[in-house]
Amino acid sequence: MNEEELFRAYRETHDVALRNQIVEKYLYIAAVLAKKFVGRGVDYDDLYQVASLALIKGVDRFDERKGLKFSTFITPTITGEIKNYFRDRSRLVHLPRKVSELRVGIKRASEEFLAEQGRKPTAKELAQKLGVSEEEVIRSSDAGGVVSLDTPVDRDEGGMSLHDVLPADSDVFERFEDRDALEAALRSLTQQERALVKYRFGQELSQMETAKKLGVSQMNVSRMERRILQKLRETMKKAMVE
Image 1 (tube, rainbow, N blue to C red):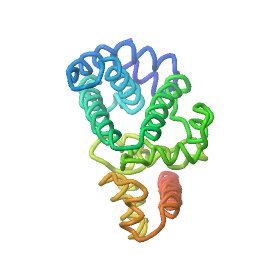
Image 2 (cartoon, rainbow, N blue to C red):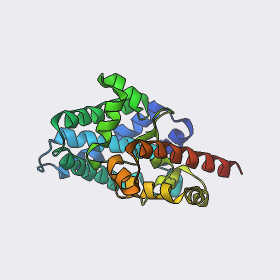
Image 3 (cartoon, rainbow, N blue to C red):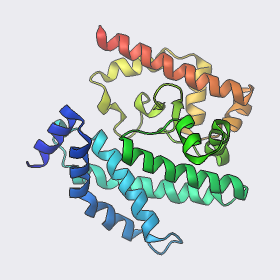
Image 4 (cartoon, rainbow, N blue to C red):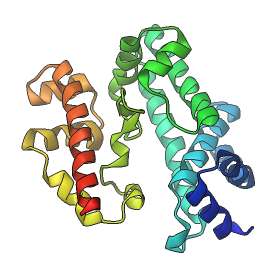
């Protein structure tokens, strides 16, 4: 099968074996881009792992119907993930050693789980895999102000993240046929909820920093994130049915 046929088949079947076939076909791109960042204090193997994970995510997000070549789509995606890795790594240097080590463990465990299961793990699943409490996973993931649109917010319901429903400069809208419906869903948020989205996923502040900005507790921020996700999911589901 050619490129378009491969991605069409995967989009229709979500066959993990087919996804792996596509990933293997384009691993050379991950290797080339990882080599470009060698010499900046990080081993090639680590960079290649980051690039490979970005490739897997890219395969899941790519839509061949838009007429774009996958190589064109995935190159900036992988490059962005590598740059984010360096940014996050620089922030980890200032964290307590125990927290830093746990964050590294969480990242590796997440990558292994994604490769094995074809989805991102929940905080509970990570805690079980690492032999720590769920609270430690959540606290360590939030440390240092590092947050990602891919971070599972709805931890009790399959690890859904705000990346699935929030607009951004990338290709978040690929999952939805109606962009207007998504924008309408975002307008349904309260002023405080929109401010939380801005701080957490626009400015990439930690839950603690966001709590200070909003004048609430960190626990309230965590609860608000779950409520926002649920509200957006329900609004989008209703709009798509109509």
